[in-house]
Length: 292
Image 1 (cartoon, rainbow, N blue to C red):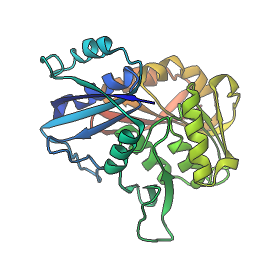
Image 2 (image 1 turned 90 degrees about the horizontal axis):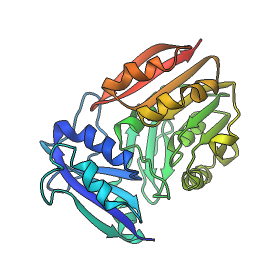
Image 3 (image 1 turned 120 degrees about the horizontal axis):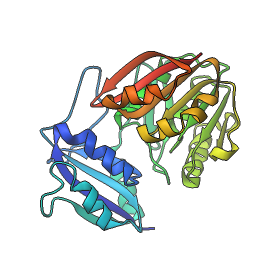
């Protein structure tokens, strides 16, 4: 199956807006590079490893509406320049190879590692390794919102917990939660390909007995100890009652995928929750609340 890659460059301060635009257009994955084609690896605390000019590459399914892409990206500073946006088809093998070339083992927090199959890290009994390969749905931890969620999970003791991962994508957060001790994880997504990728990654990490990948209509949980939702601000607001409804009273609700300036609007959609913490990175935010 051929894929479509959209590539264009923006100034550092416009990266968050450009990423958001690509995701709203339906990008399955977004990678960031400098002009010398060096990948952005997950930053350490306080680091912002972005260059003055950043090249973004978005991966889309075939059948992409290219005219809409050009129109929407023209609204992003830099995207309006003639020839600024490049669109090309790439094959499965080409994309998988490019993905693996850019992806290296990454640590989130203190103990949680994402390690591509076929690679290894120095053995350490304190390490928790998530084995991950390219799938039909993406979410590798390289995006700041996913990294913020992984770092939150790394700091938790989830032993015996029930958890909902709403908008699971590749299932990376579901797998991390299960490896951190969650007894029952419900991974929810409206994309069957995401559910397939989640199931594959759960089996690869030997936690498939604790992870159920389901469509939203099949998610009936009302007593989860933790609900994670790493999706965009619009769906976080639109689905607020559904997301909050999955949690038990006193349960944690962790939201990400929103820009820093969208925090107040998103929090206002959750009146039965009390905010505990907001952490930001590169223009993106993670909001931690508990249900009253």
